[in-house]
View (cartoon, rainbow, N blue to C red):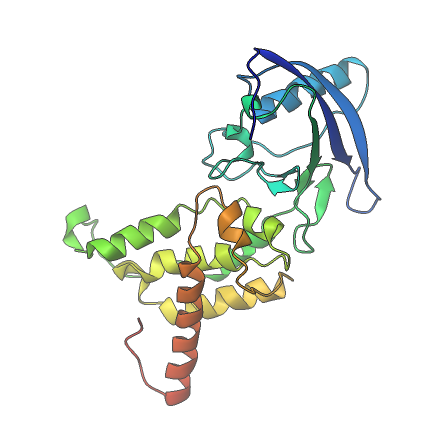
Length: 264
């Protein structure tokens, strides 16, 4: 992606505006003038909103919180790409130096049946919260608090658990998938705990409940196109989906055979 050598650039924005999920939406055009190339994408929208408010117009609604690429709150589609053109980058960490002076930028919300629009670029992602809740809590009785080193974990398992735990639940995987599948998100949550000894007690029930909730929320099926992993700002691997499917199959088989099963 090109950039600008100057300190300020002017841009044309085509932004999706929608008053509520019950009303039709449309694209509206705005000028972003004198935008610093050191500003983040959200700071650029802040600047546009300040001018809209000054003119007595409704500001553009969008989600944001930490603005450090950690919380997963921000997220929308920029020029057809979830979180924009930069790999491994959230919207809040995308800087305007990645765009060219005079460029037209199209901005729209995540589009998925399970992510209904609230307003403008904001969508309801509480379906993710319900999936997490369906997984339940870890109920291992550990007694008194243990030292971190009391539960030895093989390094490959620890690395895989940490990698899966990086998922921030932003929804870019859903928005980038042609089927609006949430498999990468659910797989990351399932894999995280299945690699750790603390997650073994409810292991089979957890994957069953979370997958069932994912389907109940109306997310599409996974056809392994890889668009989800490519769009993920944390680079969550597709191998997690394979592990989730394996966990689900293992649970079904052990129930059918009436044996405990050792898992994976």
